[in-house]
Image 1 (cartoon, rainbow, N blue to C red):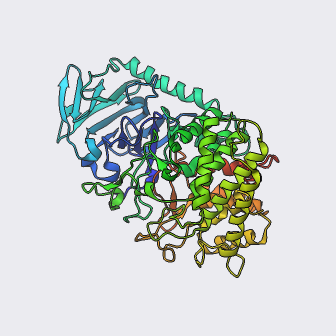
Image 2 (image 1 turned 90 degrees about the vertical axis):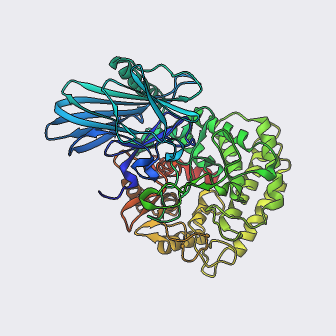
Image 3 (image 1 turned 60 degrees about the vertical axis):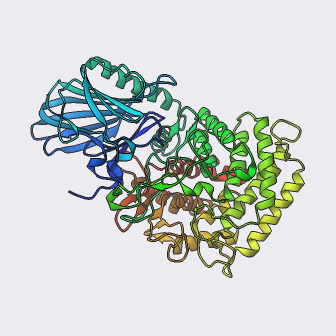
Length: 610
């Protein structure tokens, strides 16, 4: 059996929880009722014994799949020698705050006759807890501690080898369906689909809710299909009760095949703030942008000294990291990690991200938030006292703290946006109470002076950190945030040096792992976010054709249903890291706006000009 590939998986979402479905029709990852809940099926990062729900032809088949337009409802077509079936998979979109999380699976025969097999192996607690399963009336009930799942189906099921299985045949015009609903085990079993029409209605309702939302995407410029698809994926990564956006719905999909670079991404990074806000605004999704901004203000409220670089879906701050030693990892990549120790790191750039996102929100027309302005003023005062400190930087290195160039540049962004806010909205709500514009402008000038004195080598190239010889793709953001203009010789030299020395078959690595001590063993692939930044920079320095070629290549790396992970391994020809990655899909939207030929200022030009 071939080794699994990250691009073999499609993503299902109900904007609260997630499932990952293989090309063979096996749900190998399922988290109810939240993205960060302990998975009830975890074979994605383990073995089949750690839980899955497979559904497909009993024999060989030729398989194609797609999302129904404007949705994350998956349609998989299996063609066998004896006939054809279409499987529709969906997580039911919630109709109210306490909607029961439900997985819906329907098989319809469209030609001939096909023998199929379903196997459901529930393992609560990330694949460790074997539930107590019993038959009640016409459904199966599985309970494991606080969690319960109820299975309803119109085909007979039976127990086999600590799993629930069904062997059945579907002919043309016939269908079979399965509904798996989660509830707290101390509550009553929720009602579900009792007849075929009820499940059809539930799928139709979910499709309708997705399309009612995606019809609000107003982007109609070049690459509009790609932008729309990525906007739908970002919606799927949004935790609708709070507006938070997870970096990815998965944990521990490896950045290095078989290696240790495996992280839990089911949390919300402040660093994503401005990128995501811009992407929603560019797609015409102002409500999503405002809900994201409001989540950001709630999550960061409190003592500025305690600001974290990431939070939970409702703003939780305690995200302890631990390892699940009973799981073998994706393709043998161990450990499998839950939580994220980086939450306790000092990463100065997040202060700039928060300030910039609030500034850009106001520029885009969102109403001012006076209480939020008071919070930002407190954050600024704190940055003023710590910007000269070393930190762990954007890449969350687990080596020694350094004076990272990117971190200092983003401190400049914090002070620059404060000065612009004080000037632009002086005397009105939204001036931020930031005080004298001259104070923040002087601080911004001090930061820029120090960076330009201590981060540039003899060839006029910005390096990773003060006194370092290492290159780092994060300094590509220097023109993108307006720290220096794109035609500055130092910017051009830096872009060309990174393109030359951090290129991995034309894609861009974050840094050289054999030069930068990030506290980890092994290597990693090209970082897709950095590759999109390179496309943005190439366009800004006048190399438009090269920028478009790189962007088109990045689009070609998506899997068959349009998903993009965090990295790409050119050696292996496969996606790497957690998937789908919010940063990658945000970049598809933002870089498209940068490259559009209609003369409108794109994301980077707007942000750099501020």
